[in-house]
Image 1 (cartoon, rainbow, N blue to C red):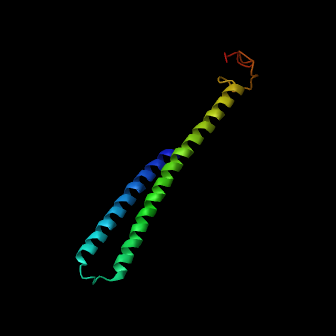
Image 2: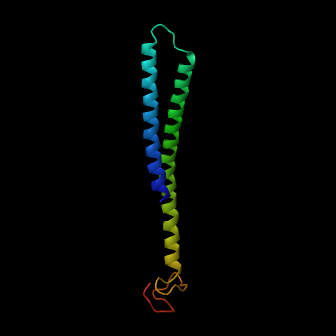
Length: 113
């Protein structure tokens, strides 16, 4: 569940960051196009630069969540698989009583192991 949420959130943030960065870049190009005489305030260009950095940061967070979703999910699967295997080997699946590794039948309920 955590894996899916991290991957989906990562994808959404990647797309949102890219669109934000693209939109700000297009606004910056339009501003530069209309500023033929150089009359635009430098604060406009500074603000657009900061907004581009924000877009890159959003994309970075999305990528980080995406990678963590894949890495975390695989570790959880391995741990769960090991726990299930050890539990099924040490206890009877029918009655839950402890059994020995070499037993073919449960000593408590006679169920086949």
